[in-house]
Length: 276
Image (cartoon, rainbow, N blue to C red; front, top):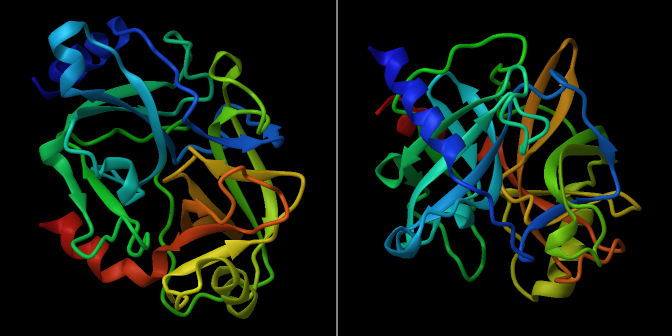
């Protein structure tokens, strides 16, 4: 019975058209991902209440990271909207517009399964983390696998990390040029001191210890790839270090670092809410 319900929800999601907007985050430049390369990567589209009265539209929302058979992590600012009725989560996807893609699964999840951090602040962007509790367990395979969470003492400064997501390929692109293929790039993680200096110079406020950042460069994350994973390879495993949160410059100028929610700062919160 459970599998039949999942299939029906997925089929329902296939019927709804995509409408892309020009307010999306994007991986600027970067490389195209291969199938099975990022099995923990998820993509979220949103269904807002206002759309149901007219006709159903699923609109691109954010990225996310699968951390268990029943939990997806993303950014709080992705879900903090009273008009969102549900999200359609893509698992195992590389080409999000290809409903026949091998390995791709989709699941519609209503907003009562969202858990937004209780101290999330939309003005300061502090505690920008949220959990989506899946109504059904996702079956793992070569295309869909969870990513390992870090421990609190894990050292990563100056290491090379990878971030991934879908979106516009250049800062000047319009919504009509939305890239529907998963992309990624690698960048160096900056020290806490370097992140702090960059943050304070723009925000003029105290630097939250729950943030990490990566060095600016030709390749970068920007605005709408929010909630997407920042990972590092440790031994033979990939470890989730951060979730894409914000840029200091609204035009995504490559001279500024990209900031991510530090996952290791929220391990207790993740565990408590995932198990509740």
